Amino acid sequence: MSELRERPILVTGASGQVGFELVRCLQGLGRVVAPDHNTLDLADESRLAVVVREIKPSLIINPAAYTAVDQAETERDAAMCINAVAPGLLASEAQRLGIPLIHYSTDYVFDGAKPAPYQEDDRVGPLNVYGESKLAGERAVEDCGGLHLVLRTSWVYGVRGRNFVRTMLRLAQEREELRIVADQIGAPTWSRTIAEATAQIVAQSMALPEDARADWWARRSGIYHLTADGQTSWAGFAKAIFDVALRDKRPKVVPITSAEYPTPARRPANSRLSNAKLTATFGIRPPQWRDALALCLAGA
Image (cartoon, rainbow, N blue to C red; front, side):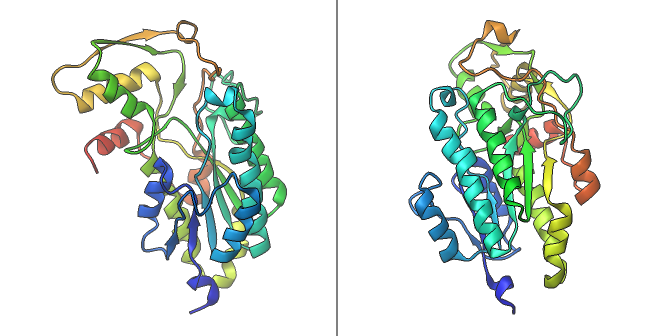
């Protein structure tokens, strides 16, 4: 067995909603090393490279992120540290080791003014600090010039962490009526959908002879969109959650505008991302968002 095959897959942020699912979905593709925050703190720039070099991975997957969108407006440095500086350092270490980096980004790199789903090469223009920090992370990864995939996703939810599904289920127990924004459109994406697609990509590379993998990654390096199929508004998403999860008492969902629910960070009106490049390159067709939501809420 070769040295590369014996080296592990390094997953950051394994306690988060995407990281948790990644560790599960990557089983069978090799040994997975998922250090906790105390071992691998992405905010500790001096320690980051040391830990990566100690692990000597065959692949780095980085779902760790600063995701407090509104809080980022007053914590710009913290958001930039985790979302921009750390990915650049990971990309640099991946390049030094001659291995790929898979990094995740967001629909929030766009301003939402386009009336159709965004393509990977559409003009970016983040409306908030979080989006700016994620865009800076994309560029830091690309600028290293190594083997990489940047997977942009949107409206992520799961069984762990803070997300819209868990918030709605909690509020449903507390209120009879919920006012939910209806003029922002996107594709709710289950964290397992993201992890399964990532695992499929990794499996495709591992099916190749070892000496062919670097060229395979090099020819595919770049940005891809990865979201569930279909679209809805936040209000539509809330209604779907209640339809699936609550059989009896359901709160009334009152659609409102973004102007009626002001937040510190502006959000794009259109967060739809086209998966066409992902499907054409890797043959991956993400599930319809309602189907994925039903599986998630069923405890699959």
